[in-house]
Length: 107
Image (cartoon, rainbow, N blue to C red; front, side):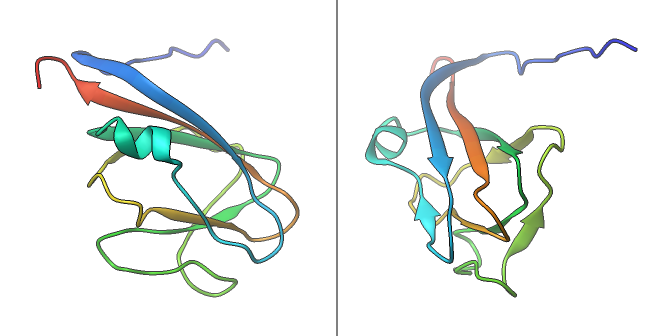
């Protein structure tokens, strides 16, 4: 079975980041992604599951808090509020979060 890859129309990729999580440390977006003033973040997770805390809820992810994102799932698209409050932490092992930041054309 082949997969169809769909890209959002009308956006440009303006920054990328790779985050390797380990232990109970909490990771956020780097200054390059934040300075790019992205409108949308697309991310995927490899090897192990992660927990995510979103800026709107002020949740700091930990072993029992935050939204679980399963490694190997389809990439997730998020509307981004341009703050560093989007945070990631490992559920176990050393998951890798690959993300790309996008900006709407003409904005």
